[in-house]
Length: 182
Image 1 (cartoon, rainbow, N blue to C red):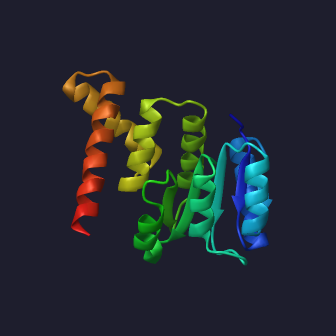
Image 2: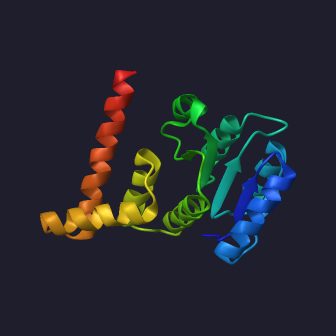
Image 3: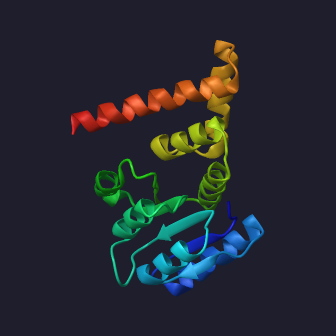
């Protein structure tokens, strides 16, 4: 799997700042797209380790782009949206495999989410999937999620992979219960 990261942001100056920040943190310069059409072309022509969609786009709705990319077998899609748009995003993207992060978002939380998604795409195991679900559904940081899995494992005297599976099943049931309430 590729280690390439694509940043999709309608504001070129902000997109360049995010690229600069990630280049330092990840050790590799991400590609930048300022439109949905350009992002779609780059994501479908090159294998990406992660695609980060941040902010509004001049030519289309970011949710539609994320959904279309996920349907075209592009993995590792992360979308950053305003908190006020969370319900709409969950309705549109539920079950698509897109990771939804809400603004305001710290620099470290963004970098951790991208690293987790890339590890999972590279064949990361159950622990990484459980951490990503905790980050996504509970709004935790990666260290908080790691500590939670570690603590459950020690408290229940289970291997960490088994504890991670238990957490994933519980989070899935919790998500289904929330969807049933709607």
